[in-house]
Length: 502
Image (cartoon, rainbow, N blue to C red; front, top):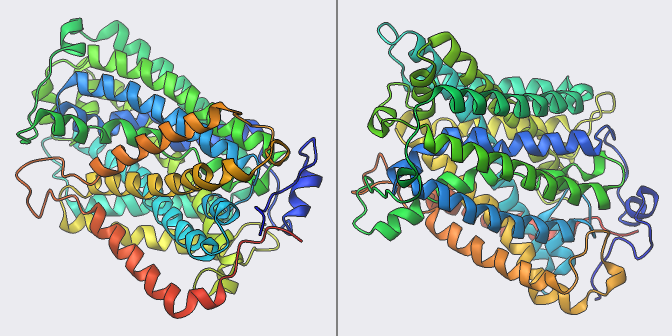
């Protein structure tokens, strides 16, 4: 069977693309290129995410680890985003990665490869979105510690309640506030940019500065790893995590006009804009760090909070700066729930999930997949129980997000390299086409993805204990095991293929 394609006509208008892939328009088309771009910007929240995970880099080889790893990760992410954007320009549907794998794989592999890609993609998105809620919720709790250091003693169960509060807010706004979601994403995008400018200026003016030797050359390894090279690579976590989530654009493809053009623009554009902003922030952050030990032993648990307090020497000023980061994390969770629920809904629409007819429902009045939104929220709330038993659960969730998302990115790119580029003709591609450079970009992306996935499974510290163990492989293995059992017994009989053509 030849590769399935969305259209060979030009220009790639809605009228040409959507009808030919046989999708009935059930969702409201409210997203513009600007609101979708803002959603991707806030879901990635690169400079804000750097604040949350900077401790990993400072522990593994110090300030240079963060700076150089950031540049490497930025370049690797551009290669991934361009590779996925080229495929999304051909097949712009909410299914995203699993849809693309089905279209690119040979006939004998289509069903199994696409189903497991969908399973991995949904799992990765659930954990990535949960990590934003973890960051937002725990930072809100830490604000109480910051302002009441002598009277408030934080507990894990309280932190879990803050996490659940963020999840419930996101669920409510995705269901009953669906009409205003594009506008709230735009507002969050404005906060994302204005907060960046304000905090960058504050650090630049008020913070004492390290010398260039500290930022670029002063390596330090306090992670316990005997090998500095391994410690350095484990520190990749701090720069990979801020670059996750740009694939959200493809999962909203059926809720915007001209998806073949706008989805790639939103994906690649959000990576470039966030990457440049994050580089500027990382540069200023590293020069303004002050005493590393003071930051790493902060009672808040977040070094950036202690840094803001040290810089401003004022709890109210530090609180305002911290709230900017925390509120964008909350917005990222809401945006991530939008994207993840659409992927799960598309998977159910293709009869690939348990109770598929129920989860594929779209509320006729609200025009959103309510059962899918609620299901994703419930799974994320259960994931929060990890925090009760594991003091490093937040880092474990970050690692799981990287492993799951990167696994869902590498599969369609591999199929594009092995099968797609040999069979697709120029007329089969969409407006975003890399030409002869495409193969090189794809191979760079695959190489980077493999390295990052390997080291995302390593524990952050040595010696390894049950409390600081990286459980990413265990959780991912459990997710795949459950999925395999379902697929073998029921799924392979029900799931046929994504809805692609009439």
